[in-house]
Amino acid sequence: MITEKMISNAPYAASTFTIIAGFTVKDWGVIIGVILTLITVIVNWVYKHRQDKRETAIFNHKMKNSTTNKVNSI
Image (cartoon, rainbow, N blue to C red; front, side, top):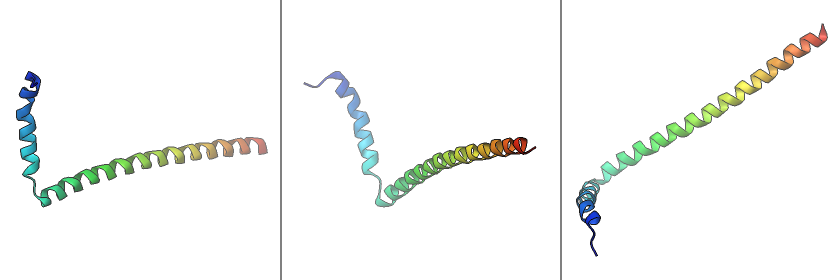
């Protein structure tokens, strides 16, 4: 049974398929390259952010310990 919703979505599906089928191998290479580049940028940003947080925590810990040691030695 074909419903009204299926009939109304058919042109969108057909146009999407037509666009995808019209891409050449070179086009797919560019699209995949752009997607992988974006993924790489996001992953690098996440790991740099984590590294910065760790380094800040280590720095704060060292600063806290160095001021504590100076107070104790006086």
